[in-house]
Length: 438
Ligand code: NAD
Image (cartoon, rainbow, N blue to C red; front, side, top):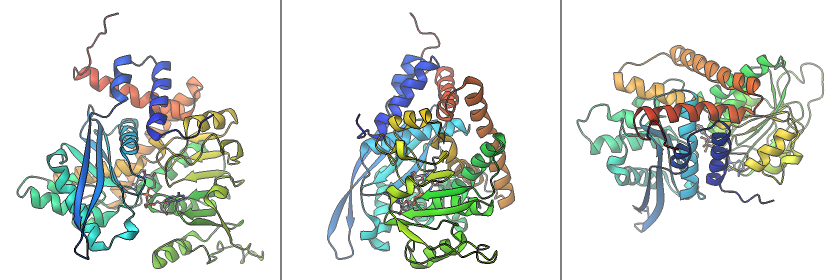
């Protein structure tokens, strides 16, 4: 049994399996196995010491049958062409599951952002936008933040795009996830985490599982993981473990997540050596448990109710799937479970809520940001959140209904919905013949 499966192979395996079971057209399966275009760029950037360094970046545009390409840009040393292709394909599935008028794309630059100054990061971001040239635009391809990119990077990127296209309408709609003061949407920063909690609560209600006191472990306390943890905490769950790339911290009673989040903001990284016991434990006259360091591998195998991978791909593989003790896994990261591990988890009765539904709150509010930019009319946070709540309730309901009725996994149900929508658009547009001759 091999665990060295690439995220692209994982996507293709799921595509073939689900596509085959639902009688998806073979030509559609073949088309969706590949991106429509990949931009492979070598980007020269002047470093602070006057030297030049060449960075390798990519933008994979997987599919635009349902609307402009949409997907994040990641800065990480492991970025490569296969990874962005896989993540772009997941975006096509995700935008279709939540039924927003976009296709799928993903970009990335292979680098460790810790090694670059802010000025170097800004020059790199601007150079990447110049390289992407006419391949992006409000009606062509709309990038957003992902791992190690954030609102500041989107603000530089949007500014560079508007300099290059002075006078063009709605240039700010080319990037989403911007800070609110430069055309971003209220609610976007926490939207992925909030969307995930909405989906999880929807599932728990359906299955009559009480949320209070559920033990939660979150791998990756970045944008997605930290906001998910904060909403879980607000909903009465006990977040007992969190981690970042250096490792994690465990407290059997749960952490005081707001204090931990504040500490991370101040320190610039997760504080593994500072203990923030959950409020209420000491007040109830109990002795607060101590905080213990733990590795990312240990975090995944904790005896918790809910496991939340919110970092990178391929974290749960055939090697550790048998050791997972959580009852429910909600994939807030993209592609954290390999297909082999998925099969093992399904056999063991562990419920997986798939990435293309669980983390779709981010792209949904990116869509709302794009709509607000196009009409130059800005919504209140309540309006954004109320639209997001309706969207996630409908999408989660559709997926869980199919999973129950057809007795299939949540992942298969989500793919069935997405694939049917993408195929329908391709047929209607005449991209594949309406009838295939036998
Ligand atoms: P981020 O850069 O804000 O945070 C990533 C976190 O993961 C950091 O805490 C980092 O230290 C940690 N990490 C990195 N490598 C790790 C490792 N090997 N083990 C454990 N932790 C590790 O990124 P993010 O935006 O929160 O994205 C996290 C995941 O969510 C990615 O899979 C991304 O594609 C997905 N996602 C993000 C968004 C979004 O809106 N930002 C939307 C949908 C999906």
